[in-house]
Length: 250
Image (tube, rainbow, N blue to C red; front, top):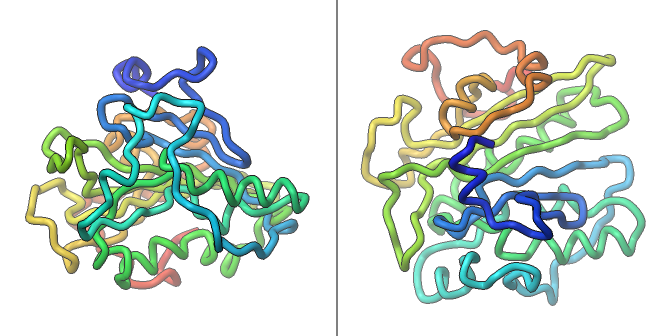
């Protein structure tokens, strides 16, 4: 995290990292959304738990004024999009999995998405990245670490006092054959950052390098993750979006 992001972070118990069950995050004061969320997946101990009866809620440990709650989503077309997927978090002992299930619904883990995007084919690719990994890769111990969040840009449209992100990112780390690998993805309207009108058919999912993702998000990722990324960087104008999870280079 860069200096500006650190200064903007909401502190909990003196730390800018806020822990939950199976995930942690950094919450931005100025944007009232998570700047990043980091979570672990243990595919060998995943539980099937219902989301029935769990309501979205602001976290009681943090000041409400730094959280975007139902007042942002009520009476409009904005969907509440989980940053850390609920299905990724429900693992371990049953009581532990149940707590993670509930924790995933705190608004600190939620970001606004247009309803038609959230139900679109592009969201299908985006939402299935972790599943695609397990389907195509022999992941060591079925354990994966994921980082993700919105991309904050100065020109983001402000609605009800909240800048609405038009891009999202995800970084997936795992071991295959004893080798650590890192794969980065960007959900955007335009990989070259040309500002265009928000429209459903302009959203695309791109596979990018960790270095490119670092530049885009203004976050600093560990050198270990850079070294684990062997994706050959090419000119953005020459790289097309993913039209299927089978086109991902793992």
